[in-house]
Length: 126
Image (tube, rainbow, N blue to C red):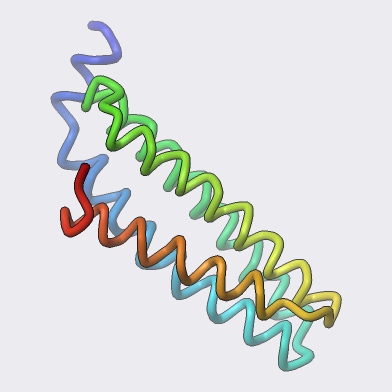
């Protein structure tokens, strides 16, 4: 059995896992961010590590869905934005942990997250 067949057969599982990981990841990011900002570094670090696990889940399920969509341009761009979002999230959490000004990174996270969600729901199409 080739990998394309496996992914096609289990597409709904990948999609549900992907959607769920996005929702949980957004919540974990905000919790970790505000824990770091509140001076709760140990708790923030734990939540940050859990968020990193969800980064991996999101990337694996997203890549699987990208294969299922045969690397369609729209979904490829969405994937690139998702990787950028992960970078912005990591930068924002790192700055928050070091008590540096992280408002710009937080704004970048929110903007890219909104764009990706709007793409996911089909509001932004090209």
